[in-house]
Image (cartoon, rainbow, N blue to C red; front, side, top):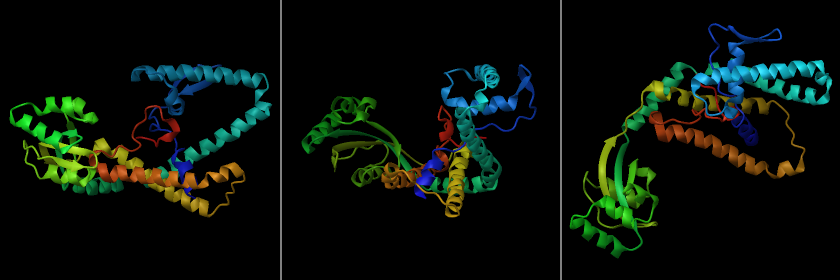
Length: 312
């Protein structure tokens, strides 16, 4: 079952636009009318193949794509391609995809309501407001003596940022040791304990972790603030939709007979199950950890095609 959930999670319908209010004809190819709705569906289908075009040029680009598609399709019919086994195999595959997409939009997507999304947002926003975040810089060195030497140089007036760039052993050195904002659970316990004990502007004594010795300066601290609902609504919908899809797929598979007959494929069943579980947990964790402030799971539509859930 878990392997099936992975397949579903990685093959959800592509991002889709709402049904156009006026489904007007935009082009005619040997009598075939290309309408706005067809352009939108085609855009969903080839979004990952689109060049880096400004948004205003995407529509005419996709219209031209459809013109060429229909011209080739019409000539394929004239030359008997529609009677070949190759065409029939492709038709069966695309028909299954079309039915799956239609089922998703008509049966599953409506299950996620505005009220449910707002309830999730309110709950996560409340959690976020109770979570303190701090911004800190640090200098990571290999020994306690090196850390003490750096403290002595700071006491003489040298800039923390300059010393971080010169001596720190991790990637934050390029930013003057700046780690940005983080919560206590995001860092190792020893580091968090020392950091959260500081007041803004204070510098710690040497702190030892498994990574080495740290000198920490606290820059700022603040309570979590949720982004506006409208900014994270799409991401919250995506998380809820994935849960609805998983629940639906579990019921369907329980009532169905699915048999893997390929022996090599069977060998990877356990790995697929683990990957499925990890994928689902990652989606949920993104919402729970980022809360309503940064529930960015599944919201990106930059060229992922079938990997994404539909947006508004």
